Amino acid sequence: MARALLSRLLSMAASLAVASVVIFVMLQAVPGDPAAFMLGLNAQPDTVAALRAELGLEGALPQRYLAWVGGMLQGDFGTSYTYRVPVADLIADRIVVSGPLALYALALTILIAIPAGLIAASKRGSAADWGVMGATQIGLAVPNFWFAMLLVLVFAVQLGWVSAGGFPGWSDPLAAIGALTLPAIALALPQASILARVLRGALIENLGQDYIRTARAKGLSHRATTIRHALRNATIPVLTILGLQFSFLLAGAIIIENVFFLPGLGRLIFQGITARDLIVVQSVAMLLVFAVIAVTFLVDLAYTLADPRLRR
Amino acid sequence: MRPALLIGSVFTALFASAALLGLVWVPHDTTVLDISQRALPPSATHLLGTDHFGRDLLSMLMEGALTSLAVALIAVGIGIAAGVPLGLWAASHKGGWIDEILMRTNDLIFAFPSLVIAILITAVFGPSAVNAILAIGIFNIPVFARVARGGALPLWTLDFVAAARVAGKSKLLISAQHILPNIAPLLIVQATIQFSLGILAEAALSYVGLGAQPPTSSWGRMLADAQTMIYTEPQLAILPGLAIVLAVLGLNLLGDGLRDRLDPKLRRVRA
Image 1 (cartoon, rainbow over the protein chains, first blue to last red):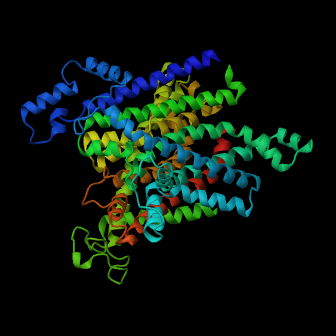
Image 2 (image 1 turned 90 degrees about the vertical axis):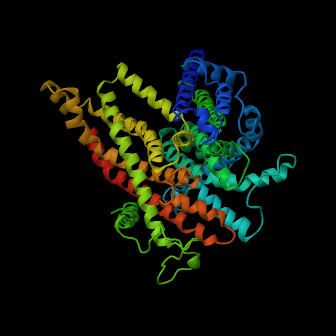
Image 3 (image 1 turned 120 degrees about the vertical axis):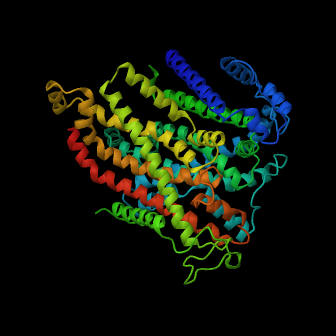
C-alpha cells in the first residue's frame, strides 16, 4: 500500500513538473519580447524595460523557471500588470465561484447519471432503456455552451424566472446558489450522458456474472442484487470516468462562465488573454492543470481503496 | 442496416455535402452586410432568414459547416499521421524503453486539460483557425497512438506475423504491411469519434473568440454573436446550435454503427 502510494505521488510530481515546463516554455514562445507584447505597440522603451525587470525576464531560462516555480510553491503567483495586484489575490477572488460551480455540476452529474444508468441497465431493451440511451446520445452531441444559451433563452428571456447572468456574491448564499444553478445544469448534461452510458455498460457486464446468479439464487430480489452487488462492482469504471470528468467540468466552466458572465477563473483567463496579461494566463493555466492532476491522483487512491486487488 | 448506422450516415452525408457545396457555391454572399435586410424571418429569397447584419443564414451555416469540417478533418489527420506510427512503433517494441517512454508521454498528455492548453496555445500564438487546428490536433495524437498500440499488440502474437518474421521481414515492414491493414477498422471508428469531438472543440474555441476569425463563418462564432442579441433576436441562437448537434450526433451514430458492424470481423482477426 505504502509503495503504491509513493509511486503514484512520484508520478503526480513528474506530471506537474512536465506541465510547468510546458506552460513555461510556451509562454517563452510568445513572438518577440513578452513585455513589449503585453504593453502593445505604443509602449515607451523605459516602460518595457521596467516591465521586463518586473516579469523577471532578465537572466537565464533555467533560473527564471526556478524562480517562477519557487514563487508558486510559496503562494506567490506574480503580479498582474493590468490589475496591479498579486495574481494570487485575483485567483482567490475567482476560485470561490469556479470551485463551487464545478462541484455543483459534478453533484448534478452523479445525481442524474446513477438513476438513469441503473434504470437503463436493469430494464435492458425496454422503452425506458431506449429513452435513456436516446437522450444520452443527444446529450453527447449538444455543446454545453449552446445548452446554456437555451437555458437562458427559456428561463431568463421567456419566463423571466432568473437573471441571465452575473453573480451576487456569497453574502447571500441562496442567491449565489441560484446564480450557479443554470450554469451547473448546462455543465452537467453532457457529462451525465457520458457517465450514464458508462454505468449502464458496466452494470450490464456485471449483471451477466455468476455471482449475480448466486445472489439471485439465494433469494435476493432483482433490485437488491443490482444495487448491492452490481452497482458496487461498477464503481471502478465509474470512478475512472468521474475523475476525467472533473477535468472537463473545470475546463468547461471556463466557457460556461462566459455565457453567464460569472466572475470565475474562466473569465479571469480570458480577460488575461484580451489584456495580454500573460502572468495571469500562465498562473491560472498552471492552477487548472494542477487541479486536474491532483484529482486524477485522488481518483487513483480512491480505487485502490475500492478494489482490494489493486492494493499490492 | 442498423438504424444508428443509417441515421448517422444520412446526417454525416448532409453535413459533408453542405460543407462541400459551401466551398463552391452559397445562396448569398456573406461578406456583404445589408442592415435593411436584418433579422428577417425565413422567406423564398432567404430560406432560413437573415442575421443581425442582414447576412443570409443558410449561406452562413454552409460556410460554418466547411470551417468545422476543415478544422476537424485536419486535426484528425494530424492525430492519425503522428499517433498511428508512434503506436505501431511502441507495439513492435513492446516492453522496451521506446514503448515505455511513448506510453508515459501519452499518459501525461491525457492528464492535461486539453481545452486549457488549447486556450494557452491560441493566447500565445494568436487566435486563428490554424492555431485551433494545431491545438485540437495535438490532443488527437495520444488517442490514436493508444488505439493503434492496443490494436497492434494482440496481432504481434499471431502466427502470420511470426511467419513474416521468419521470412526475414523487418518490424517496420510487418507493421506497415500486416498490422496496419488489420487495425484499420479500429482506426476508422476512432476517427469518427475524434471528428465529432473536433467539431465540438472548434465550436467552443470559436465561441470564445479563439477559433476562426471573421470574415470566416463558424458555428461557434455565430452563437457568440447571437448571444449578444439574445433578448432582441432570440431566434438567431437556435440554428447554429442545431447544426452542431446534427453534425456531432450524425458522426457519433456513424461511429457506433460502424463499430457494431466491424466488431465481429475484428474478433475473427483476434481469434
